[in-house]
Length: 86
Image (cartoon, one colour):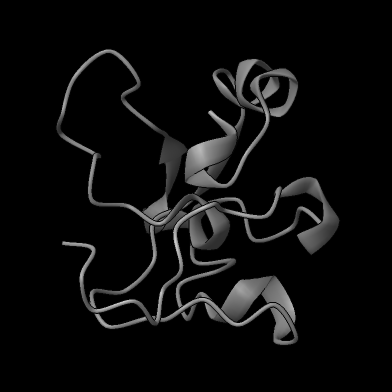
């Protein structure tokens, strides 16, 4: 799991936690409030992720769980600036 930016212990604690679905073009910023989720606090976007299906697979968890501190996320082994990684 650390390959994707979170440790297993953090992941298991998130399965029943609610968050806010971000807007389509929101981009995570660790220095912005709620990770830069522009839908944060809007009740119609609050829900739980569908962990057992692929419905929510495109959701950036750092935005969805924007109230978690950035130190909850581990360093991802994939370099976001490496063009050879799909």
